[in-house]
Structure formats: structure tokens, C-alpha cells
Image 1 (cartoon, rainbow, N blue to C red):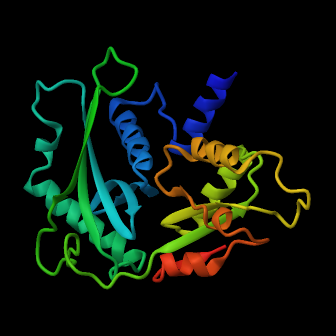
Image 2 (image 1 turned 90 degrees about the vertical axis):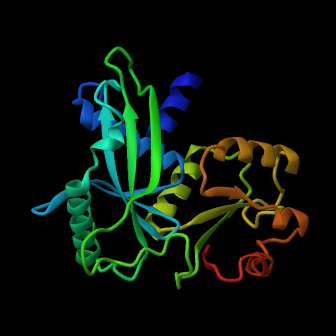
Image 3 (image 1 turned 120 degrees about the vertical axis):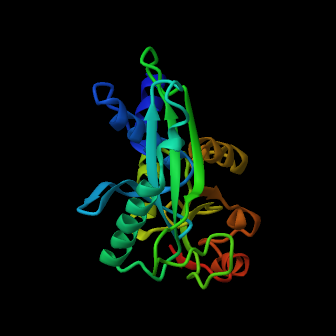
Length: 255
């Protein structure tokens, strides 16, 4: 039962792979799971234009990431990334620029990545996945300026603050936090366990140490989720926002 629950949570958080899908689609689904586990948010899949197609559009730390996925069953035809030639680079550039224009994102930094997937036919999951960031430089005239690695005037990060007794933390907390992260485009969600909840005058049943341990186990593996102990260190009826503002002075916070 516990194993099935863990598998369900994993699929809910990172997505599933259709075993009956063609090799290329399975590779894209595996790449989507891979990116989500690294903290990327998937915002579009198979974005088709007359000028080209983008396999995956994701967001990482306010950077728009266009991903070309190449899947091969073996290395007999060479490295999957070798199939991104000059013509493919130009079509990816045009398609990415069109996406940025359509969604009014030209002021945001962007890059084009390549993910290579090796998936032998006898295996139920990929043998290897490799992620090459900024693998394709925009080609042609009048393309967007690539800010990656340099200075940029990016907006402040978006910070979510999730307070509660978490006594105990449960699946509903995780689902709610992830839905808020997606809806509000949050870069980070701070879980702030309450020393004393106004809704529970008697206080938590479990000790602070036990609640912290349960919380750490629950959010383990989610790169955007973090535990903050400001209220346990400075007990109060509600989380002290000033402590968080001092620690994240440039963040736009959502409670």
C-alpha cells in the first residue's frame, strides 16, 4: 500500500510515461519528468508552428527554456544531439522567437537546450538521459539577446510562505503547495511550521523535532520546497514576516 501511494505521488508530481506511445513521445515524456525533478515548470509541449515545432517549453528561475528532445534506441546512429544541425538550429530559433512574441515574453531571458535520451527496446525506462543547457545559440539576424551567464534586469524572485502546524503534514498539504506554486509562478515555497497555531489552542500533539522531521521527509526531492524554522526559533501566534523579509529582501512574497 505504501509503495503504491509513493508511486502515485511520484507520478502526480513529475508526470507519467505512456508505455504504448512511440519512442519519440516516450522520450519527450521522460524528458519532462527529468526536468520537473530538477525544478523546471513545464508550460507547453509540442508547440507547433508553420515555421517549426518545439518539443518542450519550460521555465527555470524566470528563464524561458526551449527544449529539443532527441531519443535513440542505440548509439549506432551516433549521439542523439548530433542530429541538431544548422538547419534545425535555425528552425528552433524561429519557433522560439515566435513563441516569445506570441506570449509577450521578449523582455525575459531565454535559451535553447537539448536533451538526449537513450532508450533500448528491451528496457522499460531510459538507459540514460543527458541535459545540455544553452546547447543551441540563436541564429540569424535580429534574434533575442541571451542573458544566460551575464547581467540582467530580471524581476525579483517570487516567494511563497506556507505556514501551519503540520501535525502531521499530509498529501493535501503537498497538493495545495504545488498548485499554488504553479498558479502563482513561485520560485520557492517556504514551509513554516507554527510554534502555536491560533486554530489549535492546545498546541501541536507532536514535538517540534518530530514535526520538522516529518516535514523534511514529505518535501524531500522537491527542489522548490524548503523548510524555514523562523517561528520555532521565535515563537509567536503567526509567522514573523519581518524575519523572512530580512532574509529575502528582493523577493515578492505570497502568504
